[in-house]
Structures are given as C-alpha cells and as structure tokens.
Length: 173
Image (cartoon, rainbow, N blue to C red; front, side, top):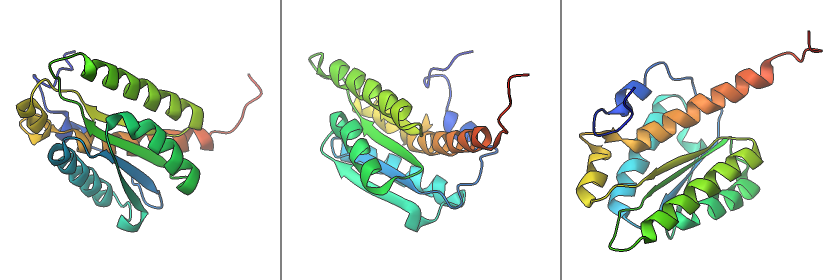
C-alpha cells in the first residue's frame, strides 16, 4: 500500500463514514508560523467537525507562536478546558539547515507522548513539506487538506475511545 501524498489525496476517503461528534468539545491549536497554510487547514478542520455535528460553540481555537509550542499549549488547554480531543495544526517547511528536522521530531514526539499520557486523542496535524508549493498542495490543493484529515482522525479516535469505554469488563474468560 502506498501512503505517500504524492500518489493520492486522503482527504475525501477520510470523510467516508465518519462518526458524529455531537456533544464533543474539541480544541484546535494552530501555529502562527506559515499562517496562510495553517489558516486553510484550520478552516477545513472546523468545517468537517461542524458537518459532523460538532457544535461551533464546542470548537475551541487557540493560536500559538510556532509548531514547537503545540505540545505545551495542548497540555495547558487540556488543563484549562478538558476537551474530548485536541487537534494540533502546523506547517514546518524545510529550510537551509536541519532546524525543520529538530522541530518536526520534537513536535511529533511531544504530541504522541501527550496523547498517551492524557489517554485522549491529541492529533498530529503538522505537515512537513519541502516547499511552499508542497504545503499549498496539502492545505486545500491537489493533495487535499490535512486539516480535514486531522479532524476526521479526531472523530474516529473519539469513536474508538467511546467503543472501548462502553465494552463490559470481563474476568478474562
């Protein structure tokens, strides 16, 4: 199976058979760096959530200085608002140095650790393109919109959590 976005757009496939988000509170954190790209992902993410019955009043939106700040901000937002899921959106474009690699790795590990520690969906919606054109292709262009995919992932993970929480406890046989 080929998962490279160069070969497909997952945005449309991701939207099929999504669970309802009714009654769920979802925080979306957005990096100010590459604001035009991130704004496009934010709008697509919010639209998908509202289309799947998340009330616009239950979507919390917070901007942070950069992608590196997303995990810390997610932890702060969780402590203050206790949302059902947190979506982290950002764009780290490759530069002339390895700075992008350090940022991307730190953010990915931070978000993963936070999700595991909080036992709730904290979604990695950070794109790591090589160029601005590639970023635009992933923020509403020919490769779909990663904001849509992040929101769909949040809904699917909330549904999985609901299913697991509703399973009756067994005694092992």
